[in-house]
Image 1: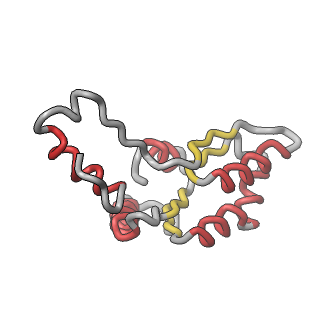
Image 2 (image 1 turned 90 degrees about the vertical axis):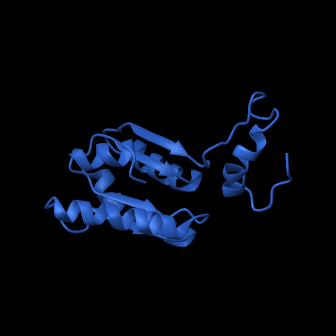
Length: 143
């Protein structure tokens, strides 16, 4: 939420709308609050960074007429999006339908993967991996 994509967009003066992850909504709220507080303290315009929650809210945000107007604006030269495949498709179509189509950069429809390699699963290491496994799986089987 406060990574390179967000920092790049804000540095370029672009507004950022972030959809909270349903798996950790409170973390999303706290992270967004911290970002908004920092931007406010830096004198950024109000509303530059926004958080939406819930699948319907995320879809409504992407389909909002203001987003269509923004993507259609001739001053916009590219669109970036991290999120659902449905949201990506909508924004990609808007970018491609312009009289002067623009690039669309998308990171789409996935959750960060967790990979355990052979070294990780040997001897004492499974205990170290359990907190990470539990953060992405409701009730994992012990390794």
